Image 1 (tube, rainbow, N blue to C red):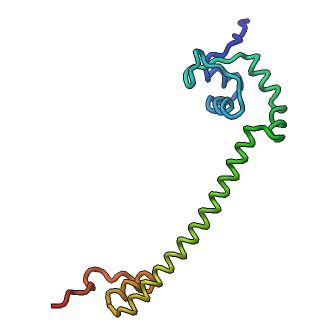
Image 2 (cartoon, helix red, strand yellow; image 1 turned 90 degrees about the vertical axis):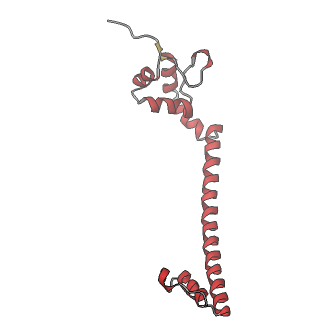
Image 3 (cartoon, rainbow, N blue to C red; image 1 turned 45 degrees about the horizontal axis):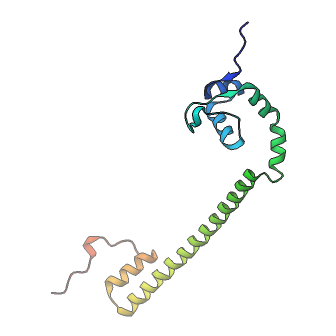
Amino acid sequence: MKQQPEILNSWKEISAYLGRGVRTAQRWERDFGLPVRRPAGHLKSSVVALRADIDHWVANRSQRDAASSQGDPQHADRDRLIKNLQELVRNLAALNAQQAELLKNQRLARRMLALRNGSTQDILLAAMEQGNLEHPGPDLSVAPAA
């Protein structure tokens, strides 16, 4: 029987050894430190891994998971980013509410100005913005005085 080589020479071999997909293996390397090596320091090209390193990494995974809940810097960064994202979402909701209020006040100011000036065109425009009147169309536009 042929003995399996100790070195895994590609993402495909590494992922097959782990019983996962290639992208999962790549994500595990990026997020959880799956031990792979890049010949000649290449960042994105070919990778190699030793079966013994992967076996050790898998065996110690439960210890890593326990450590991550006890202040692992990588998880602390992720927690900080999640909190920042939640704050951004809250701020966006507040900005949207402020924008809606500003638009409402702008419509009210236009309506008051139109009523003060008494211009038919301004009154119609203000009523359309309030949603009280549909757009009159081009045939109802105000003709210039002769």
